[in-house]
Length: 416
Image (cartoon, rainbow, N blue to C red; front, top):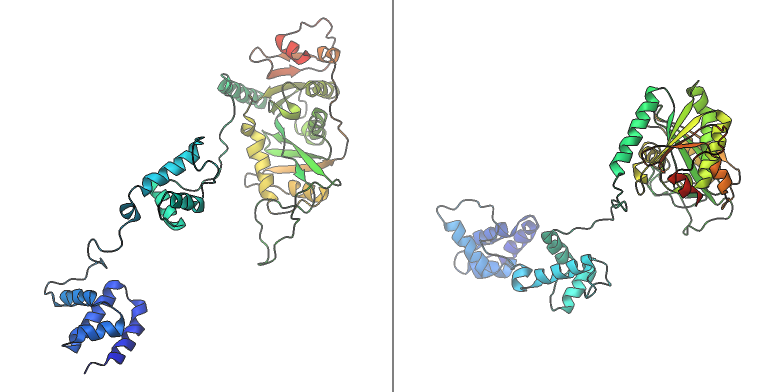
């Protein structure tokens, strides 16, 4: 007599630990041990169909049977969706490509390229594909989720590479002569207050730093504009944290503060200063106030100020971006910039394995916008433009008599 209860209990105990082939062989071994009527009895007790038990008996009875890696016989299992629903893969590729290329006739022009939306669009075309299935098919087509990548720099100037080589040669020239060479720029303006700051910081589990839900500017303390001065030779930084407008006057005042605090003692007896700057912004090549303020700075210090601007659209190539600002961003990641004091302390605490040293100060002065610089003031600037792109490369000398100075094409551009 076949003990169906015992077979069922034993099978239910082992079944969770067995794959499909092992379950089939276990059921077949019980059926063979039971003798006549064993297949039907074991099938009723275990729920395994008679056909798999029969195949198991064949496998057990084969004289040359060897353990196989395959669980199912060749060709077994459910047919792929791409076979049961011909055209599915082509339809999915069409939908994704049309959305990617922005085809004005595309059915999915309105939709984000999410698996859920693609699954719904396929259903409208008569196909059945779940979100997970769409994901697998997309990987088969060579698609995956990606973020935007900042690689487009705008128009490419024909002298793009030549200007970078010019800047590098100028820096080497100044360093060889023992003269200071700096890279300057304004870091992204930051809201001051209990606002979310990108990145993560170690804290006790389940105790994140509470910040505001909305990033609306608080009138007081408002925003800050950190203007950086990176000493290329000394690998050190100076950041002037302004609380007013990011104007050319603020930019030159930041350089002035660096010179008075660090530069003139570090470079004793120097007679010139090289400034590498972006082509736009408060220190832009076409900003009149920038040149006027540099003239005032040259008059105060007796320094000849040489400026080399990066070509348009290449601000991310400026040395200060990846040698100073990047490390400041890492240092204050995940920390709300709740006050001016916190910002100054976080910037001043920035260091790197390469011994980067950063100093920081708060600039509470007012820097009004829209200050006009007259043609007469521009014509009085003691400027000497380089033969190679004089609009980008020029030197401002301490003031001497400049009456009747010939006006170059770049000067005329400034005077417009």
